[in-house]
Amino acid sequence: MNYHRTFFVFLVLFAAAVVLAGGLPFYGKWLFIVCAAFAGAALLKRFSLSPWKELEASLHRIKSGDLQARLDDVKGGDVRASAVVFNELAEDLAKYKKLYENREKRLTALINSVNSGLMLFNPDGEMLLANANMSGNFAHFRKDAPIASLDIPFLPQFLEEAKKSGKRQTRELKEGEKGRGRIFEITYVPLEEGNWALIIHDITSEARMAQVKSDLVANVSHELRTPISAVSSICDVLDDPAVEPGRRADFLERLKKQARRMSSLVEDLLSLSRLESGEITVKNERVNLSSLIEDILNSLEPLRKTFGVEFECHIENELSVTGDSALIEHAAKNILDNAIRYNKQNGKVFIRAERENGAVRLEIEDTGDGIPAEYSERVFERFFRVDPHRSRERGGTGLGLSIAKHSLKLLGGDVRLESEIGKGSKFILTLPE
Ligand code: ADP
Image 1 (cartoon, rainbow, N blue to C red):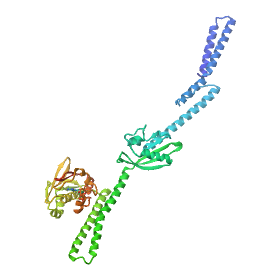
Image 2: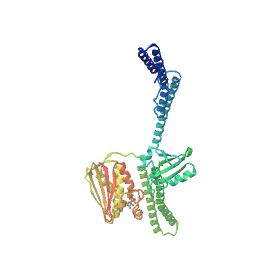
Image 3: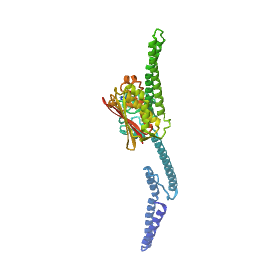
């Protein structure tokens, strides 16, 4: 209630008193007007307290979060001055709230944009905050049991140790019971007043890459060790003047074989590294498949004769594919080379090609021992051999199929294996038409 309305009420009451007092005798009239004035004064007194009540109500609105509460039409003395201060305070409060909300929005956007899981805990271990990465990357993440729901077996133990140390600590931990899942770099960060944070960074691909690199170095060293030590022993033998000239030729032949082995290994490693680098230019040309296969078979003629294997080729003359002829040749030659080397004596190699679902399906099937089904994916891994002794005996590097797979993938095609033990292996190549 403001002063205008109070005064208005007073005037109405006064006027009513004058009208009502009209029929009364003189003394009665003034007595009535005096009483009415007292009543009016009492009312005025009551109404004059209303601005304070209004102020109190507005303060309650502010307290309950309604920062729009203002006292705009309060008139008169102390109340007016207080109302002005109240309005200024409410204005400031609304401004600071807006500032705070904007800052919080920016902060939330920032922590949600981080490419790692982020959680904040109080000293009792209750989670206060978790960024979007946590629920995005952990399918079973539960806010009421954040640590247990992560399925990182050694995490609780790490936390206990880190909390005891009171210092920032980082550890690499694996997901899942047998540590077969993703690999994380987890950092415990102690904060003010006993609060602490946990940062979970997925380093699976970096760790796997590092593993692949170290495996490669170990494999290459292992592959080179045998021919190098063979070369060294042959040299020792040749150095001996007592060796008969007839045996020298034999040792020289062995020396050449080891040199060829090392050279093929280096050649294959270089091919693989070029294919994996992503820096080679892949041509997009029309390639006649039957003439390409014919060229490969011609180049493999000496090997075919050595192993006494027969080819049976059924490819339409005009069948063409699209891609880089050098890459297609490299892939198909490696597979055909294997089909001869791993075949049985006087075995056969069948080569067929046909159009299938907008691509060309090229089959290379042999009559060798076949490959166990559980290795049908692994044979395409580098240095994987089903029978390492046999592979080395036959001059294999363990890289041929890996090179074939990479070449075909670069062409937008693929290769897979269907094999039956004792019956032979069938490699199915898909090439863009
Ligand atoms: P390698 O140089 O040892 O032949 P590859 O990468 O070409 O290496 O082949 C990997 C392994 O797959 C070989 O060591 C061999 O054990 C097996 N393999 C490949 N092709 C055949 C095949 N046609 N028949 C049987 N085994 C094969």
